[in-house]
Image (tube, rainbow, N blue to C red; front, side, top):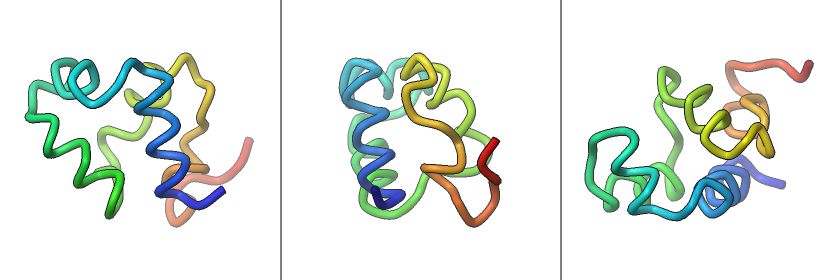
Length: 68
């Protein structure tokens, strides 16, 4: 699974763009941008928790987080 696919899966499991955007107090378009590019480092762990830890930080940002 690519980091973009992991991000998309985390967003879907967390309830979709609107719900995730509301949690992060941003627009759904911002979440779509994360799916296409990458999630900011300071948001990765919160997004994983929002997905019920279905997706792990290293799956979203393997350039920064190591598998545990």
